[in-house]
Image (cartoon, rainbow, N blue to C red; front, top):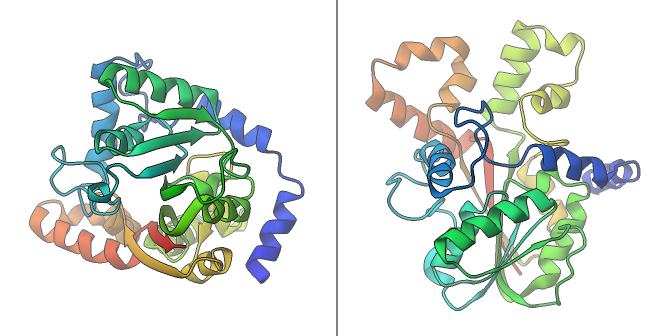
Length: 293
């Protein structure tokens, strides 16, 4: 119970208003460098930011992008038609729109009004249906046992009370229902090699910061946790079954491992892609969890 005890101690002083404020100012548009300028929220802008996310996940989860659905090798789109599906942390609405277009009876929630407005505009433009509501994942105003699926990609590790969100996910799922969740992997090459060695030792950041602080400094969010499989199992103890897989963004895992020297592989794209896939499946930054109630 040590990990749960650590979380309990952390949330005593955690202010979720600060978390909400950070995401209101920095909505998850993936255009962190403002390459596409001020968000226009028209179809052209949505296509541009979707391309950033889609191209980034071609390595394992979207090898055929832009064909198919986003994260199609992880999220069970073929099973959602006519089912009650909840997405926690809809951001700009990309995953939500793909769930809706596959026939899900969708409820999408987010902590910020900004994300809700963006997602509603996306749905309006595409003629999609779904209940899109501002709501904290730690306190879902939703009935017990009311969903067949819950989806949450890269969200709950940013929350004020991750254990509470997982309890809420379990509560709103029907018996036999499944949750598809991504959290950051503490045993990833990004955390254990890039942050610890290249940033911590070579660039000497460990002299002034903890490893978790170093990892947080290159990660978005007001707070960002990294977990091991054992820690997630502890949080998700009420679930009857938990399955793990791992992935990462294209052309990143070799950079975590080799630092600036990964550029030596660029003249060999086929070899590089094979190395990337192999590394990501075992030590990717994204820990993908399928939890069955």
